[in-house]
Amino acid sequence: MSKTYYELLEVAPSASVDDIKRAFRREIAKYHPDKVAHLGKEFQDIAAVRAAELTEAYKTLTDETQRAEYDEVISSGGPAAPTSAPVAAPPPRPAAPRHAEPAPPSGSSIFQHERSASGDLVLKFARERFKSALASEFGQYDDLRLQGFEVSAVPKPAFFSMKSPPRVFGRIVPVVDAAAVAEAWTLAARSPKDKQRDLCLFLMGPSVAPPGELAAAINEERRKPMLAGGKIFLVPVNTKTWAAHVPADAPPVVKSLLARLKPA
Image (tube, rainbow, N blue to C red; front, side, top):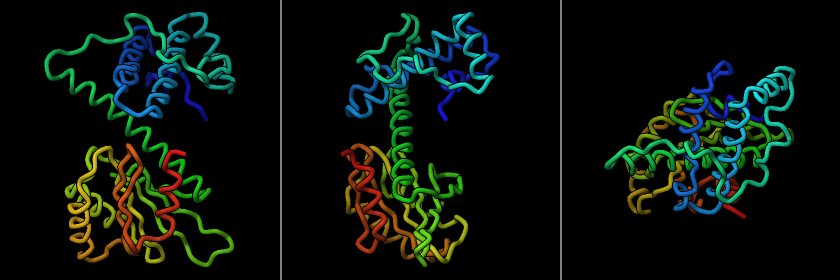
């Protein structure tokens, strides 16, 4: 189900026009072309689509007549985004009111603000891509919604198979390094025990430490007792290229998921 315009802007249906304007300025800043220019084309396309959606939501909810009509549509169970909304083919640089861009902070906080907005986009993209790969691989799965993981999937076994597929957890971090490995492994080890399934832990981020550092960190964690039931296979993944360091003894599903994650 698609999000309503209120959900896109992260405001309540009772929000005032001023609240909507502030929310629009906050959200559109995350997807401005200048702020995603350093990302790949795929990220830029996603940002353009989202910016167009936000702009359409802004125009609708700040117009009294259009807002009343839109509220009537969604209250009657109609589509959250009318088919006429121009989000399918966004312009290369989405139009927005001149006041759409908030006044930037000064000094080093400008850099921090832009890094935060870009990081938020990368995280959302990686999470949705990983969920899509899981759905394509397993069809159906239960998400345990464990704290510390974007996804903690327990796939449903195929009706013709006597063996349950491994659990698949996904955690997204700014930097995949030894510290991130230790933290993710500790969180995974505390997850509900399941002796019937191994655990494939995908540790993903836009920056990845050298293979030697990661291998040493993973070997250190593997020496610890297995508290989560089955064996843990930690897979470091670079979300910029979707390249990964795959353990030699990892289940086949790891390579299959990685193939689904990589752009065609």
